[in-house]
Length: 582
Ligand code: ADP
Ligand code: MG
Image (cartoon, rainbow, N blue to C red; front, side, top):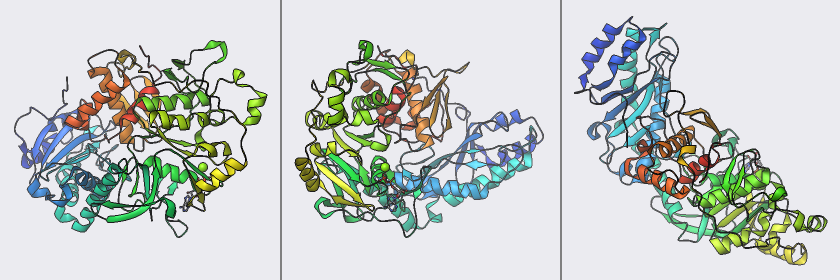
């Protein structure tokens, strides 16, 4: 695999910090490009520093810097790194500490981004990133960016010396050494990550798809702010006794909470009673959260995918015939193609695509669903007989998906009682508190039959294996063979294609979108054969990351990649408008 790293390597022995000082003095006042002389490794008192990429212009993307602290300096041995999960927790704690310290220390030191020090941190999540890694032995590698100081377009030597000889060592020293932190605080992060992972790993054995601990705080500050809603009005989660489970975790010990078993689960309740908030916590429960988040002990199986309607999206050769067939003009729905899918066809495609990437738990909210995809009631069946209606609504498939394919569904429905008949479990939200309403729901269902007939004329088809053409994924742009950009929190630019990820709700971090982009570029440039199954592409990406970490996906050493699942990569691939299947 041609993995040429840019800069930094093969340039011989690290130079001393004294040499760096001299070099910066000599660069003062010269053209900005002369900063290129920094490339390579430098030996500081406590750590080694590498310039992995030196910016060519004060307004360009800032310089990529990497430091490595050996274990005896960093001092994270034992508890903080004892298991990979603990190491993740410690890493995310350190990334926050570094980012916060950098924000305090760094100051404007000239034109553009001169003087700025920045590290990506994973927000409320706890997951692997390329920003900060603990070695097995307790050493630390940190990657961040620095804006090399300029006056106009000339090198500002004194400011550069302040940035690199004072600000950077101060930030590194104050944030990446165990001695600078309260050991209890570090332990709290390591332990929380380990517990969350253990909770999720234990779900399948318990026959559960999700677990929400008593005391969890689910609501967020706003639709664009993932931090916990604070205040006395927040109602902590409390499980109904019939659904209460006790789980033992390695650090906190025994906890109780609501277990959601495999099968079809409805979340019902009046408007504004917390249905969508619960579902959101469940969809985010595929990730681990940092202590204090409120969702530390909410876990959903790693195979859970949120699906929703997304009219206008492109669909490439997806078999949606289990939900939709007999379209006008006999359009084929076993390999449905559209540059502009409707609400119902997009939701059908999202479900089939999720199954194709290996999802076995589907999360659906009425708020983001197409009504005609979800239900068709008795009266509508009488007015428009099924010969004139291509849609087999989800209500006629959810049970079957569970029984025939082992796929569980958790569904928010406030508006349609037609779902009551087929639910294994009905959770009713009453003023943010869940109540087990299963018996009541079944009583209503038998006292008030809907009279509707199932519209499923045939069994739901097994998901066929599509073979996307590798050549239809093109990350090149102009002279660059590979261009991956993330202009905002919901968009991926891959080569000249723009992929809209608004509907891929489980992508939480910008760094995750970047990883998805690198994964698609990797498939396009590194995969050996032209047309493989989606599963084969995803397996190959997963294998590469398992072997070499997220760095496997990028030709450069970057500090802004964050872990994703195969489902997120598949979701982006499926939304690529140029995608063609063989
Ligand atoms: P629904 O989907 O049932 O209409 P939502 O889940 O959208 O309701 O919640 C309605 C509002 O209540 C949201 O603003 C949400 O932040 C808030 N909310 C949700 N859960 C809680 C809770 N446990 N405590 C306090 N406020 C909450
Ligand atoms: Mg809602």
